[in-house]
Amino acid sequence: MVRELDDIIVRTVSRIMIPFMQIFSLYVYVHGHISPGGGFQGGCIMAASFILLAVAYDLNESKRRLTERTNALFCSLGVFIYAATGMVPVLFLANFLDYGAWSHILPTNPVMARYYGMALIELGVQITVMAVMVSIFLDLVTRGQHEDVLEPKS
Image (cartoon, rainbow, N blue to C red; front, side, top):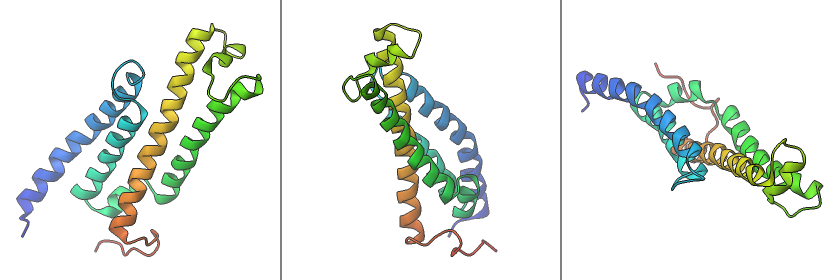
């Protein structure tokens, strides 16, 4: 049996931890292309912050902050960013994901264009991984029911 004091401690600690987890997720993304980490790890950390919110408070609080519709939008947005970043070089008769071709539209040299291209790819991966991990968690917890089927907490 969980006592009310234990509940307050878990909620307070998670309320403090969640913003730091999300900032660390962005740190892992930003430094991912020059050190271990990147979009996948950053996406998992970001998803863990939303899962911690659902575990510490309740599922309705988590769904209030990130609805299933918004989560599905993030899934699509991440895949779109990845695919669009890869298809732009094809428009300039280069290979798929050849970031050097971005120098035709960016005011920079091909080396920096590769840097920006990798950052865009990792952003797409992070958004997609975060949304898919949260979606898997929600599907497991709700047994696949949609948000309108769930009963509000009384």
